[in-house]
Image 1 (cartoon, one colour):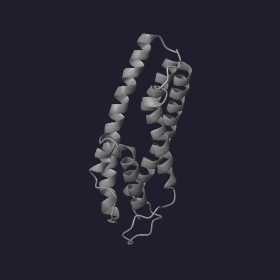
Image 2 (image 1 turned 135 degrees about the vertical axis):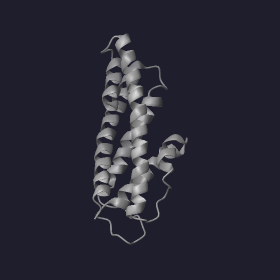
Image 3 (image 1 turned 90 degrees about the horizontal axis):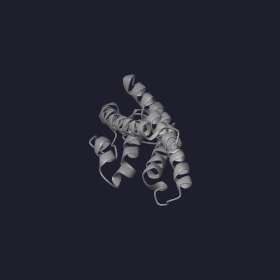
Length: 171
């Protein structure tokens, strides 16, 4: 829903919708992002808490950073990725158990790609083309931001599905 609303928002900027429809799309996009953010932060907090039970190796951040990492300025550029990376590495069944270390595990690059796509969307959609008055650059920047949002959404769905499966059926 969030990704669809974001894409519709970009289509509206390209003139695909009348202004009144575009306004509804923008508000729908904001609302769906807010709800999605809350649901995801709750999932991440639970996943982080469960990861410590499954594998008590030392994580880089406490479970509270699964939520605060998204809210606190500056650290929000890397803490959420670190929390997801630690959860992935802790619960991945291919990780050797009993080492008390969170070594990088197979497939962990998905988290890096997700975070790169997410940050690309965030930077471009908030400030990327706003530094210029050229509407063509702004439109292309918004389009790239929308594509990055779709990539980030697909990757985090894949990541969260795997983590949830691993936590539901730990070896």
